[in-house]
Length: 398
Image (cartoon, rainbow, N blue to C red; front, side, top):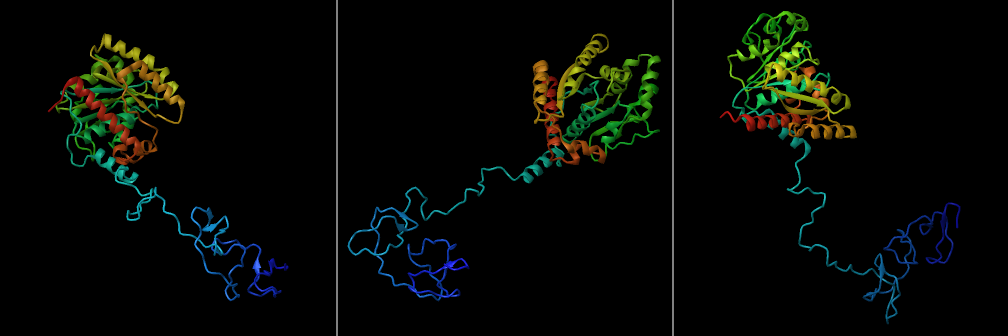
């Protein structure tokens, strides 16, 4: 044993060697299965010990790394040699090509980017074909909820764009003084622009106020400016103040399939005008407790409007928004809403998606901003479900 961590193998020469001798073997050198057991490590340039003629091993003797574990006592046996591997009857045939189990087959799904591109083409519908059924008559839907921040404007804009992209003629009436629906559709709504206030107060026809939405065929928007904030007070002394919007929509000469009215987060005269003008009410419900707390009061007001002003008004659609599947609260709210409203709740649920929040800053809906996102896909499915339900109730416009 030497200080440099090596030792002398007396089986090679039987004498001591120097430190630099090639026959010195480190004690850290690992044993290799190909080397003879108990023999020397073959080193280049070192004298090799004589070996005897190899003799085949006896069948049935267990081996390790090709070396028999039990010595062969048959006549003429010598140092053991590695034997040929025994074929495995369960392994695939040699003539069959080897296929890695990580290699995808044709039955597996396409890559995520390909699926996203496919969804984007389906949502944008570049061919312009009518893929969503058109109703037999105009459906006037009021998107209302007295609680703010539940997704009324976002739902109005994205549903309108989805239906317009797939062959329906849609008009959006922005009845919120904040004008967020006008911003989401990139329609000018600064001071001095003709808006829905002129229709309510001065009886200006909708044809002079409605503006076509750029890039979306068959979609119009009636913008709202800051002047609408004073309409609540000015409508108090106007004759038939609750039905001003209804008469303006009825007098619109262009045939439409859908009219979406985006309501403010209150139950004032503007919301009452929307409820009187509409035939159906679409209520977006955020999957949180506060959204359920004010829902009872909204239903009571809808019932009052139905009894005194609009007997045909019906809560036809409930849409769950801002659904977070990571929380149990979202599941609990969904179950409560579905148990209470039954089939009126859409099967499509709008998840929390950052693309939905980013789109208005670019003056777009999420349908055109990122058509392959989860938010766009969810709103597309909701629009398709609304269209199919309308055909089931009202019939199809061929």
